[in-house]
Structure formats: structure tokens, C-alpha cells
Amino acid sequence: MADDPISSRHSQWLKGVLDLCVLGLLATGDQYGYEIARQLEGRGLGRINGGTLYPLLARLEGESLVSGKWKPSEQGPERKYYALTVEGMELLQAAAPLWREFAGRAHGVMGGGR
Amino acid sequence: MTANRRTTYLQQLMSRLLYSGVDGSDVGDLVAEVAQHLEDTGSDPIEEFGPVPEFAVEVIAQRRVRKRAWLRRVALPWLAIVPFAVGFNALVARPADDTVFVSATESFATFAFIAAVVAGIHVMVRRRRGDSRLPPLIGVAVVSGLFAAGSVAGDLIGTDLGATLSNAQRWVVVGVASALLVGALVAARNPVKFPDSFEAGNLAYSPLMRMVRRAAG
Image (cartoon, rainbow over all chains, first blue to last red; front, side):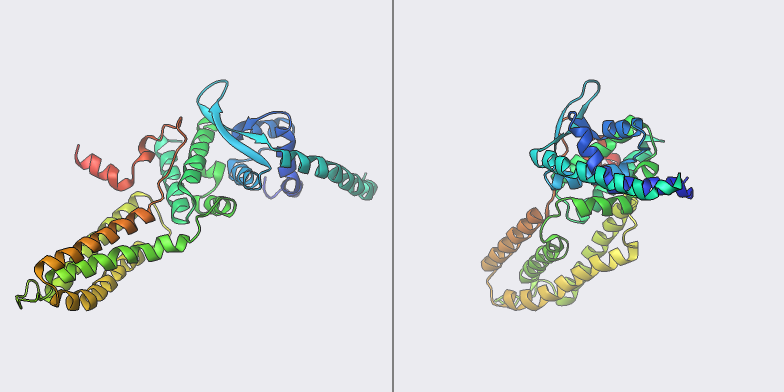
């Protein structure tokens, strides 16, 4: 569906806020990569493949916004769980209202499209 | 998706990240995560993560890359080869008592043979890894070039050195050269450290080691 203009737009929007969405998910509890991808898809943000997710997690970890630790999962082998750091929480709290404001303004401008 | 396809993907990824200077512990961590993700999803590695070169570029942009990665790839092989060549030439050059051990031509022929063997192993390892970063012939040229340059340097330094040394002294030179060689090889190491719980299986061994193990039955 890469040629679908709506689907392609969806991907572009997601690229801009995927890091904040991941931080938001981790604010609810530690999660591992596949679990994060499943949650994002379950919440209607579409399928996030590993090629997008893991470099993003590496960046967030490099910026000390999340921290990763291998520990046993509820079922199956050990997995690398990511946790939100204090810096990550601060960024989320600062950026989430800005996003809401931006999205609201964009919605206001596009209102004529209804 | 076959397990073989997954293993090949992980090996290629590991190889590319290490070559790019990503720290061995970061490489082990990521490879274990990718392996676990593929296990969970059951998806094809290329569909899920994209072709290895593209995925690796994304990862390298975000991961700790060892400082002076170029040093590991270029300077350390030199450090390893030149002392080896100097030591070899000091050993075989005309000694103080004017007895020729091995002529310069024989010395070069020996190095050419070593270069050919190393280049052959290099090509085999790259092909086993399915690594297409450099066409094999360029890889052969790089390795052979390093050995040839090492041989020239060794002949220039080692022959003169050897001509002024007694037989006992030349073994000291060989000893020092060997220590430098070992030191350079140790410094160039960037071992992959997988998480303790990760069963690396085939990934834990280099392609060369697997070939040796297979040949040994």
C-alpha cells in the first residue's frame, strides 16, 4: 500500500511522532521491542516493522531517554525491556502538549476539508 | 522462513556492524534482539528489517561506534604485518657470519605464498558470510597489497637489520616482532558479547571456525 497517498501520509505523520508515542507507551510500564510494536498497532497506529523500531529504540537509548535491560519475560526467554528514564519523562511531558497544540491548529486550518 | 535464512541474515548483520566499528557488546545486544523479534513474529528478516546494508546504516547512525574504527581496519593490519615481515626478514637475511639463510627472492616468494593463502581464506570467509560489501577480487587485492607492502618494508628494514645481527640477536628481533604482532591482533579484537541468556548457537562461531569444525567432522 506504499503507493496509496493516504497510507503514505499516515507513515509521514507517524515518523514525526513515533518517538513520543514510544515514550508514551513506556510511561505506562517497561516493555520489549515486539511488545511495543504490537501495542502501537493495537492502538491503530499501524504496523511498525523492526527496521524502523529498533534503530529508534537505539537512538532513544543513546539519548538516555530510555534504558534497556535484559530480564525474564512473563513467558519465554529473556528479552530486552525498555524503561522510561527521568529525562524521557521530562521530554514527554514537555512535548506532548506541544503536539496537541500543533495537531489542534492543523485541524483548525484543515477544518474546511470536512 | 527457514532458520538458515534467519541465521544468514543475523551473521551478515553482525559482520557489517563489527566492520563498521560498532562495539561488540552493542552488536551482540542488537543481534539477540533481532533474533528474538524474528522468533516472536515468525516473519522474514528482510521483510521485517529490510536488507542488511540499509538496516545496518540505520543502526550504525544510532549506536556507539568505536572511536578510531579506521585504525582497527587499516592501521592495525599494518602493525600486524610489518613487524612480522621485519622479523621474518631479519631471521632469513644474510647474517654476520656471511652465511645466506634465504635469499631475498625466496623471502618474497614466501610472502607471496602467505598472501595467496590469506587472500584465499579471506574470499572463502566473505562468501560464506554472503557479504557483498566488496567484490572478492578487491578484497583479495587489499589483503595481497598489505602483505606485499609489509614484505617490501620488511625486506628494506629486516635485511639490513639481519646483516648486522648475530644469530642469537636475530631471535630477539623475531621475539619482539612476534610480541608486536600478537599485541596488534589483540588490540584489533572486538569480540561480540551476547546477553547471557541468548543462545547464540551457530552465530557464536566465525564462518571460518564452522568450516574447520565441519572439516574436522
